[in-house]
Length: 327
Image (tube, rainbow, N blue to C red; front, side, top):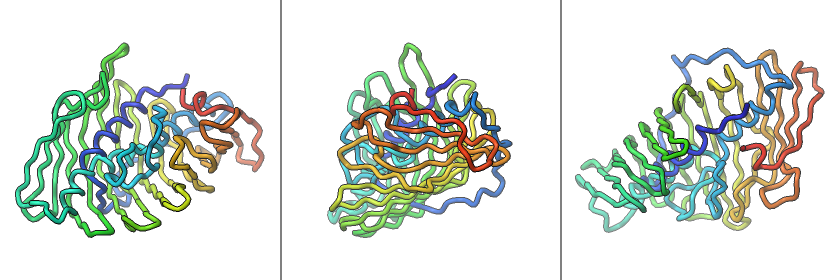
């Protein structure tokens, strides 16, 4: 049975985290010391469920229109990021970035509290030397029925007129009023770097050793992840490349995920209009997700194919809409 209980709240966490800080970057880990569960055996019974879980781990299932990029330049756009959930953590960094890059900014020991859209507050604290900062969320609600608590900290901050980088540590909890009511906690660290700010081509990269999200008995992990997004302001196209290991209680193990054909998403749309994601499980079994069109295209919009025995032939094909894949 497919389950997306983590996806929406996970994206909210990312989104909340992103809006308050501005793009940050830092150094990622090499995976040393991180245990990876045994690979999941892929078959006709679990193929759609695995595809679903991986897809909603990196694609925004909320369908928020008017978004920025999958790995949007945090704080550079007033619209929400939509493809990679980690980009939400990046966009929350906008306030930090704006303060650091503002010619009139008073950085030494800056502490400022902002009201959230509906209720609660978020407090920005920038160190005297401007190389570290934190965002503390106090029952912050930007979406009705959802509140965010916890903190995001930035270290090793380097900011110029055209670039921003830092290391980001996340420990946040999102509570959603039901039915059903849920509490989701995300912890971990990542590094973010953004180059080409204010130019035709802006590149944002996110990488790290592990991000863990828990909700009840279910745990999801992104391990040794690397996400890269390039936005071309002339074509209004985001081109996104991803690589990571995904593990969860729901799929009973782990799979590796890559994009042999990068996703491409138009600024005006929520879902990619092209791209291929490859999911590899035990003994080389493969699931291929091919984008046939974005959310405005006629059905089918996504194709799921299974090569369970890794013989080079995809023996099972499922055509779906985005809504069906993410439901």
